Figure 1 (tube, rainbow over the protein chains, first blue to last red):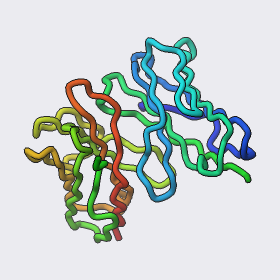
Figure 2: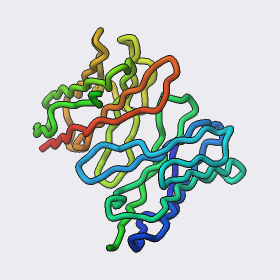
Figure 3: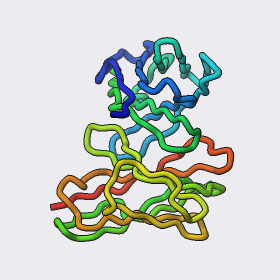
Length: 112
Length: 113
């Protein structure tokens, strides 16, 4: 079925280290990708997005990399903080603003 | 700037009952999408409403229906509830026609007993 997969279900890092969360997507026709952060008991929070005509996009402490050749997406978080602890989802769509297909999520745990 | 709001926050129903969940989109947004998120899973797309019509639908049975009002708010209705309908129901809004990023509300936690 449709799915966006994640390589690592859990990731534990030390505060101040950089974090890398990976995602494999299945639909080569997907042209828009989003990373969301979901804290316990809350809805997904937009972090950063990227269109298929780009291979890198940077935000504040976050960078998303897109490799269309191998259908791979990654989220890099610089100087990870305890407040970054959450579940991170990648999502894809072939119609920007339409149906989003989410992966299962990676839980990021930051040790102080 | 008000974000996406949803009500109620929590709900407990029994099998066979019907439930209505409500969503108000982010200010300036006119498109509403609904997702179901089972525990430990990513959200699954139910449907999307724009201009008071269902524009896209995911793989959910007809027991799931919705409505969008002229003020862009939306309702999700689920009939004949099953135990498996227990989940977090998320509403997301976006702005057509650019259809930019979907922003999510806090969700409604539904428990079916």
